Length: 391
Image 1 (cartoon, rainbow, N blue to C red):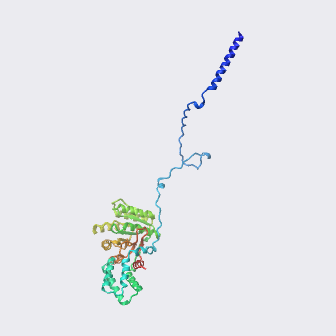
Image 2 (image 1 turned 45 degrees about the vertical axis):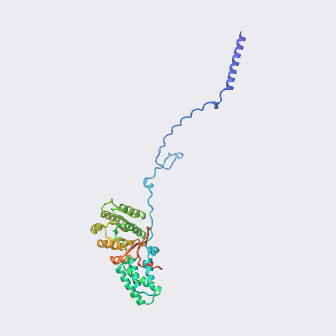
Image 3 (image 1 turned 180 degrees about the vertical axis):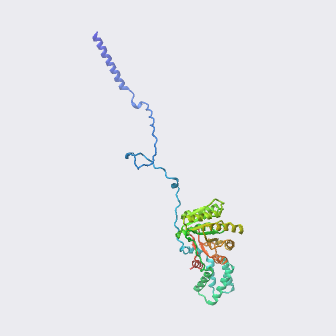
């Protein structure tokens, strides 16, 4: 009996081992099993930005830091300040632009005066040439009379003699002895004040900005007053000119009181220790009475703070005799001390220099000879006449 039980136990053990072996042999492989689902991502702790302290990171025993963003003022790039060239020699550099547009006056006269026989018909042509060049009737007659006398005395004329004769006469008419000094130097602690007047469209605001460049180029400190409050575009334009050369700009609300802006500009000029304050005034020319009241008020208010040293009348040289009529109205309203003649390089006739000085009795002090920012130059009579008659 015991032997029979032993056999049964042995058989059972063998059977169990056989089944286990078969399971190991035929079990499913790992690649046949479906993939395990991915583990959910571990949540990340929020990064706390702290001010930079000592520049230490984790490896240095400090904390991870992030620099704060720059202030909004640094993101807005300030306009680059330009350094304009000095005023000395500007007109000489711009002489070729002037000469190109003045052939009718200078070279036309040279051709007529060089003819073998100067009869009445030729003198009529000379007179017509001068009037066409905007010299004006009275100056033309004076020039023709003087030239006829000199030609009779001279007798025969070589080309060089004709050129010298014409140069002398033109220079006499341009009046080289007039004081063309631009009064822009301060008086002790008070800046010089330049009042810029003229009708809209003559280049008045542009001339104010270009004049600021001339003065900055000569080493001066300038404040601009945008007293043409009736044209927002004029105020913005003047601001742009000021920003380019680092000149302060005082402006007021659109339609505001021009005298108030002028007063504030002079006050800022005193506070900033500026050399010159340039006031760009409104150019409306509805009635002489309205113009007189407005400009008179501006000047009176300025004089509570400082002296008005210059009243510059801006004229567009291409308007010819129309510009002369405008000039006469302004001359009756304010004490004009000098003329800024713009667009003299375009279709303008050079004779306007002669006629405007003769009619108003004040000198041309500045001329605009192009569209560039540095094309405003102090007027030089000799350079001007030489450009008229050519080399």
